[in-house]
Image 1: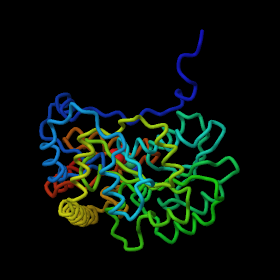
Image 2: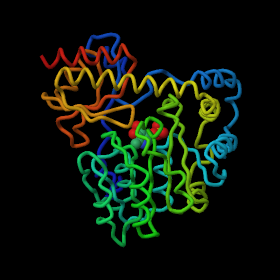
Image 3: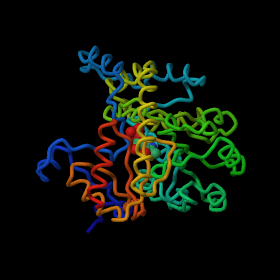
Image 4: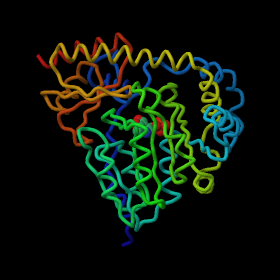
Length: 362
Ligand SMILES: Cc1ncc(COP(=O)(O)O)c(C=O)c1O
């Protein structure tokens, strides 16, 4: 009998299972639960995006612009780069896959920090390449150890900056030193999904390094600071050579029409982004102070989410919180068995989280 599935598919770990909130509530017999598990923006979507989408609903009988022309034009102006160095995707997730699809062959290696965003591993495994993991050092990405792990087979290095799930970020100097020390024939993907939230002034986007390091790919998303996770739209910057390659393999209409409309409008919504950043900073301050009061360890973050160490263990804490209608992320699938991850919520959600945590711990 022929093997039906490719062998590499058997090695892929399923994405942590999730159910719609409504279904969970029905099963557990609860109402009014809150979700702090997916690093979403609790403020809702950008109001300018909502307005633009409503105004354009009548056009959805047409295929979208396959080149995302106006969005790339606007991004080019915002970031001071030519449109030819910009690609849009069905979430930055799609661009992660496109990079791999475009450059990786099965006999090559990919270096991943451990733990990091789970999708990198999933995508690389489906391309039959070898994964080399480099453990974090004090919850931060260990660039010197990554340099040591580079071999003649290394093709891609993925760096989530700031890193999901730890919230720690590398500064500009560390990144530029790292890029200069690498052989010039491998691709570095710097995933900046949360960079807008960073408060440390030494942390900045690597976009300006694209000029001096042609094999750098920088990824951004509308899912977090702009509150458009459900639309699925992200973007990436790279050399023309890499962008052209990705354009060859992507679907012709990979970014849907309303996503393009919403993202274009959201880029003008500085007020919404500012409000989101203030809400996040205030929320973190509140949560940190409450965790200090309770006496729980946590990892101060450069993002809108952070890790909390729990005496009950990740899974038990997750389960008990869930039964109280507070959905957090157990870090067991990331190998951090004593930690949960939460994103900052609205002020009343943050208060409810703390109250519930105290209740389940007592
Ligand atoms: C590090 C990182 N990159 C990318 C993404 C996904 O972004 P998108 O919604 O644009 O696909 C996430 C989402 O959680 C993430 O944590």
